[in-house]
Picture 1: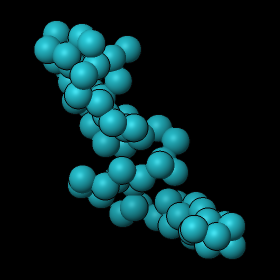
Picture 2: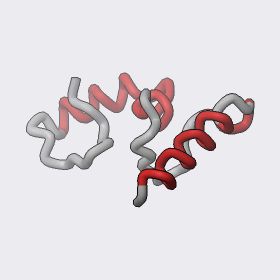
Picture 3: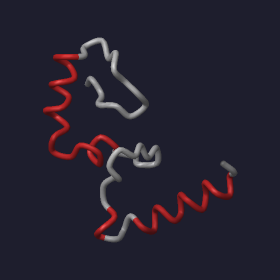
Amino acid sequence: MGRKRRTFIGRSGSELRCLPFTRGAYRDYADRLISDWPAAYYGENLNKLKEVKRRYDPENFFHFEQSIPLA
């Protein structure tokens, strides 16, 4: 993607995030531009999901760029 497009998308996203109905993330969409993506994706369930991840996948075998972090 070209620099102009990334800049446009970044600016548009910043302007839209101030609206009350645009908080969080789309289901099943990994948006790399969300700075606090764990909270946006998992909300209040994040701590429990981390516990489950540590218990059942301590070696982090099932991972991707924005999967539930071990720590």
